[in-house]
Length: 332
Image (cartoon, rainbow, N blue to C red):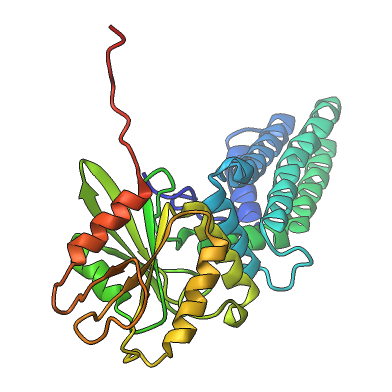
């Protein structure tokens, strides 16, 4: 199962839609004569414009029906993609899609308006009317040129989202840089870890997977988001953290009591406190580098480099999630 935006088709430009419609209409008209040729051209052009524009709108999932994680994340991503919009998030995207859908319907209405008039005239009159209809259809497509471009921008941004599955239990790993988050994720997850970038950050997230009791867990490392105080996050990053609140079933906050990471322990614990206040799931404090210092009150202590209690921490995370696999059973 891929994420809901991964397979969105390429969005054509307004010029591509018009060129395709009119070139095919010309070929369709060349196969016939007189008024019938003009009718065939009009129907072909209208259908191609209508189908292409409607396909753009209908290929998108109904955003409000998606898991809240993806609604929030899409809002953040599209907000970054539309910096000049008055309402830059998914509401703007929905409006652009609505305009494109309107243009598709309008192209069909123009064809219906001219069809009856074409059959009542002679060949020259039919040609003039068909040209009028073509001009109006082209104007309609041109009217949504900016909407098509905006949809294309959003599509390109959203396709790059990492494949995170809200229906599978997720453990978010947080903490300041250099406390051992990535080492922990690499140590306990499979070799096929996916590394993907949030489109609105310069850093990467890591999504690792492991299985326990036939249940697949996602372990999400979040550099660029949950690795610094909330006041240092921009609006888009803060919204992405809100998305993670919908995703997380438990959070591991790694701290380095030795302070070799370069951040004072008090500062690390402040970040932990903020995460505890935001996430309505179990938040475990994990003291890493226990071979160097255990001078902090924590839920668990480990040393990834010394392979000390790493599996114990992972099991504690699984226990905190408390996920139960639904199994078929007999009612007898």
